[in-house]
Length: 117
Image 1 (cartoon, rainbow, N blue to C red):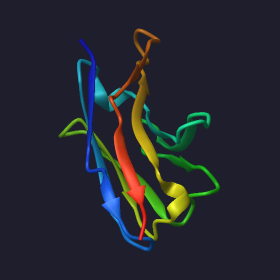
Image 2: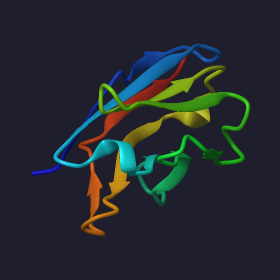
Image 3: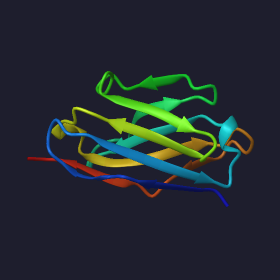
């Protein structure tokens, strides 16, 4: 059974920082690329950042230079460090993997990030 468990969301002021974590189980973590998405109510879910099994990264233009995705294969965990947060970063953030072996798409339950003064 595949599980992705996010943590680290919360309320932060504009300009602040948060670090999200996603602990994965039920997959061979080290061979899979991992992604972070976000969704605001009434909007489409959008890709925020991705990291390949080799450590290459990609980011949405809106977060480049502010967010950093990283992974720890020993802990089966992917992180999203979010700096210089803006009000428009407010959303539910989801961890995602498309398992390279089963080709199935898996999602975490989401963690709320609210940026407000």
